[in-house]
Image (cartoon, rainbow, N blue to C red; front, top):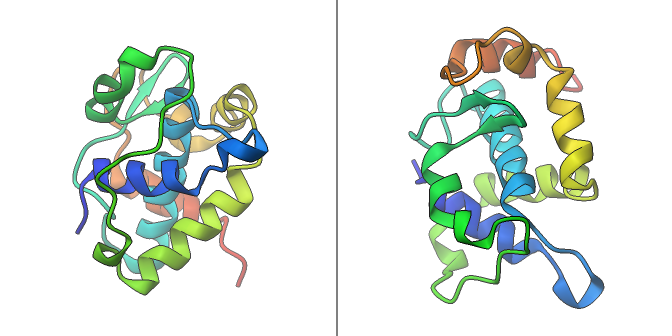
Length: 144
């Protein structure tokens, strides 16, 4: 199992600043939510242990929000201590696919999308979104 920070760094390195593809904290939060949800649905276990909470602007991993909050609405710079070899191929494939599908959207678009989904809608603001709720919802989103 990985830490949410490991997964966050992976997503940040997938961004291509030279092509004006950047990640803000808000966008990163939504990517972490989608990665956790699909991982739960596909592998029946969490990708990372940190909790995801329902906040006003959608799902948030509080630990990661606080880690990157100094950037406010600005883009998060590429991590200097990134080691791609720590990620198994299965995880890389899932994260790459999540980024390919959801990374193309802006942070506000992702926020709007998550507000339409049951895990956020069925969780009280500031409460943890349960793994079981995420797993059930994301299983329904898988193409079979």
